[in-house]
Length: 238
Image (tube, rainbow, N blue to C red):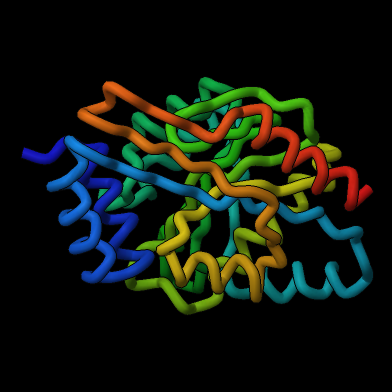
């Protein structure tokens, strides 16, 4: 039986690269007792300054849907009944991230006359934290780190991500956050394309972990190198 963590990882691979990505993962899993390598691109971008066009964009997005910014367990409880049970991260996981100081963005369709709004997707973020390949550490940078983002399959490709983007940037402006940061697997081509073409992200570094003989020998990109790469990006943008 696969663990919940592995099931989530397979779902992530399938959404990012389809069946070939899952097959590649399965082949790698067969040889992982001897050799296993994982890599993540560290991506970041600066939050743009507000312009008059941003106000128009916000008004346009609000006609298509809404995004709730949730920062407390009480706020989550108020809308738990509307969240689909099919999401990758359970409600319990969302509660855990909130308890750790995270912020969750919940996307809903616009409420029409005689119709209830529909749950579209969500994003999990946290300030001042960097999480890479299982290692997590508070960092001395004014960043909002993206842990996970998901739109339900039936709503993908309908520009609902724009609603999340607008709400996320409003949150950053309100709270003085200067940078967005996240990680992407090199084989997740759709996420890479979306992040670079529409998201405006840049690759600021790469983190690698190599495991030999069932983890008896493990090498990881030094954390100091990861922080230095992010520091260089921040300094270039200021």
